[in-house]
Length: 240
Image 1 (cartoon, rainbow, N blue to C red):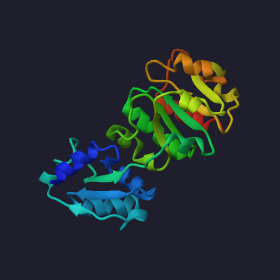
Image 2: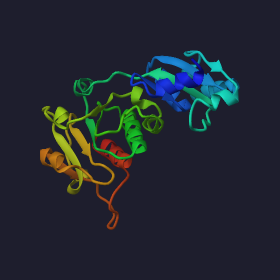
Image 3: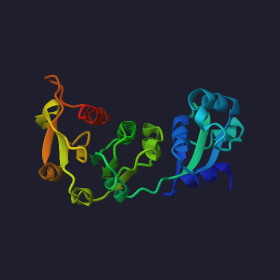
Image 4: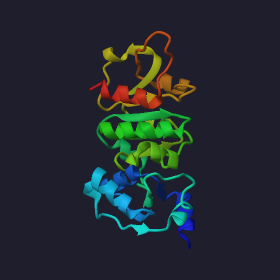
């Protein structure tokens, strides 16, 4: 099987993920992912990136160097960091998130994979229990992985089909909505589920009805909304 076929197969296999940036590879290695293959067309550049940005991962993976014309067939994108890798996905389940201490971020049917990745990056940085995605977006989609810089390996991330799978727990549910208690005045428990609506539709009526509290992020008059990841960041960093 050619390298191109191996990467194409990995991209369509639900047990693996293709890592298309150095930062994704860095975080995968740092957080214990099983790396199956790393390929570069510029070993000196990859060594320089590792020594500069992540010396802690040096020597922790094998690298195959190929000609640029071969490397360029492995991804539909131009890879500026000159590295691409295949790794095993982390087999998270919703129970992995629910069993952890801390808040949970629930994204209600988000529509932009890049925004989901950015949310995962924020959650990983804050160190909360995890992210649950309600809807069709795969948390291991290449666009999500790029947006998250591979931090799916740092925090549990799962997709759920039914909101009741997560809302049936005893955790309080806090809905972030355009109307509610202003964020500075809200008291949010440390074990809460923080619900954020999609970029277009907001939070579903079902989730708003289930919420034990509705919280708003104050904004200047005339400003109607914030980017999804920005809202998640404000909620996580401004509530203790």
